[in-house]
Length: 240
Image (cartoon, rainbow, N blue to C red; front, side, top):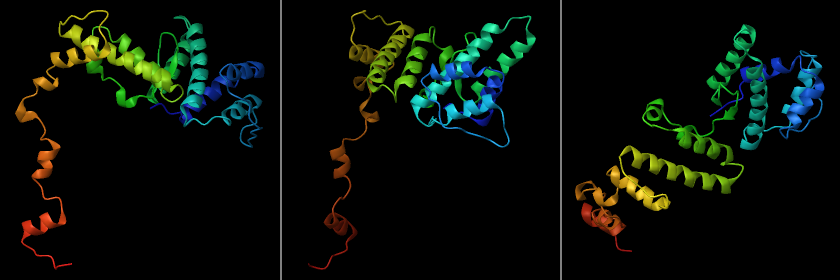
């Protein structure tokens, strides 16, 4: 999961040091971040950095909506840096590379070509490099994962819809990889069943030996009352 570490905040602070106040206000305001109370610091008298701290003081970066807002600020700044960078401008290239390196190291999803920055929230659903290399076209699945991560806390209805689309895309990828055909009108349950069958994961493809014992059978094989346990151990409980 992405973290707004001190070094990420230093990136932001350094970038805004020479930025006019009206542009700082527009940057945060455009992404729905409100200006907070004064944040003076005896160790830092910069007016611009104090303005940044006032905006940051209104955010709770442990919540997805506020984390997304600040990530959008970082994204806009990096997109500007990428837009200003050319092969002849080695200083800007170094600046861009530093941003990309630090943001990625702290868990952000960064598109180096465009400068887009996202909060990578679905660490548990992240795909390994090996899995990605095995897919002919992973873009659809990655796009669904990004949208799911963006909406899972802020828009549950959209997250559910995206999750359904992710399941559908995954099932189609499996069927395509297994040289199985499907119709455009196929419903998600049918696609999932077909994908499971192609992988040998469908219930009917599991042998009786591999099946877990039924709950009733498991219970029948183990004493589950005080009297049953007493009788099995040979201990006789005093009459009550």
